[in-house]
Structure formats: C-alpha cells, structure tokens
Length: 374
Image (cartoon, rainbow, N blue to C red; front, top):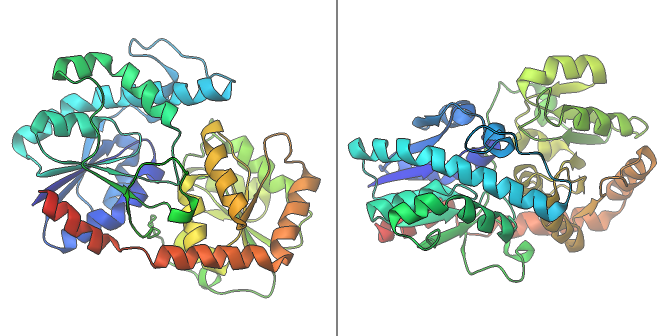
C-alpha cells in the first residue's frame, strides 16, 4: 500500500505524524511525506522520504495574499484566527499543483493530512482515494477551517466541490479528557513524542539535585519570530530558584545562550522533559502534548489567540496554570511556577494524563484502520 502524508508550516506540524508514518514503513508500506521547504529537515531527520512542494515559507503565505500584497496581522482574536485560516488556504492552493504532479508518477492508496493542511482532502477527492485527517495538537478553532475554505473557493469550484471534503477517518492524538465537548467523533491514538535528535549528554537524562524547569517558545523561533518573546519569558524567571534549560532552534541557540546565560539549544525534548519538574512555554500543541506524555506540569503563556482554548482545558484539568498576555509579569510567572513546583496535585493530574495517553491505541494499531480503508 502507498500512503501519502501531507503536512507543512513548521517542524511542529511534522513531528506528530512521524509515529504513524514510521509504523506504516515498518509494516512494509510505501510512505512519502510531502511538505514545504522549511520542514524538510524534520522529515528527513525522522528517516522518512520527503517531497518538497514549495520553497515559500509558511509565514509568507499567512502575511501576504496570492498576489504578494501584504496582509496585516489583526489584533482582534477572531480576526487573527481567520487570518491564519486564509494563510493555510493559500498554502493549500500553492501545494495542490505539485501534489497532482507527484501523483502522476506515484499514486497513493490513502492520503493523510495534518490539521490545517487543506491540500490533502482536495487531492484525495481528485484522486478518488480515502482521506484521513490527523491532528497535530489538542485542537484547532473551527473558524480556521471556515476561513481556509473561503480562500480555496476557486480550487473547490474547479474540482466541483461544495466545500472541503470531510475525512473518511479522523485520527486524534488529543487525550479524550481534553477534547472540546462539541468535537466530532474521532479515532483516538496515543501521542508518541517525536523530534529531531542529537547526541545525548548525561545532563539531558540525569536528574540533578536542583529543580529543573524547561522553557521554550517552540520550533518557529527566529530573529524575527517569537525571539523576543522567548528572551522575555526566560528573563522573567530569573528569580526562580531552579535550574533553567531552554529549548530553541539551533539557528538562534548560540546568540540566545550568550544573552541568557543558561543552557540553550535544540533539545531532545522527549528525553529532557522527563527530567524536568515544570515546562514553561508558549502553549504550542507539540510541547504541551510532550509534557503531558511525560507527566510534567506546565505553565502556559499563549502567544497566539488560537492557543487560548486548549490552554484553558489543560488548566481546568488541573495539570497546568495559564497566564494571559499582560498577566505574565516576573512576579506572576515566578509565583505560578512556585505553585506548580510545590503543589502535589498538579503533578498528580499530569501523571493521570500521562497514563491516559499511554492507554490509547498505538500508531501500529491505528495503522490497521488505514489498511482497511484502502
């Protein structure tokens, strides 16, 4: 069987699909992963065959329309989520022609698309093969889908479709206890942390005597993107009595290390998180799920409106605290971190989530459903 995985946007959109794609290859199926240029290292680093669809970075699709005219970033939360949806719609429109070209030579039996990758359902409809939607976080706001569908009106009309086709199977890696109450039915799958690796050093897997806190703003940190957010976040925790390690892309690690004076670099988060007492971060889905799978409490400081709803659900579950933009003063961050580090209920609830995730069907088990679809 041939399975085409379609993803894109950032490495964070690739890693959640790696366990299922790897399971498929291990079972003897042919697997391709199609994405944009900036995600190629994440795909090939996971040992998967990668097909480049576009050299244009995701940020360009979001901040400019199809003619290249800049689209200002809205300040209103609802408008911001639509802004993201329109950008991912433009990404899908750009990726569809090279996907069709790929499928002239390599026709898949099943197409698996990550959340917000709308080229996958359009491609599957054009080919007449099953489409599987695969979540990559703990939930995306429905308004993003609506905006993307509006942006894709020309492509949908050309294909004779009234809207973006529904999935034949939805695979959800969000723990069932954290799913939105109005979320459609889905096939749950165990979240298995996947990230680019590097040679391990003893400090990465050895718990020291001091409390350890990992701080990160995700895989998209760059000099012009969330860099200042991360520097600010670490600086506000300076008075916390704990060892602080910072997970950041290699391209900015050297400069950040000099500025922050702590360990900074691309960390194997699936290893390091298990040695941590707390993860403080931007509320990104991959980071949050990795901390959940490792049973670690979290302090969430969402840096995008779409991250607010899943952050609230995690905080209401009792495994995290959330501070909204404007609330994240040094005093508030330090106090919240101390509460998470010293109140046992947060670690107990985090451990409950880890057990829930571990009890879900494995990627190898869910693969059987794809085989039946084909």
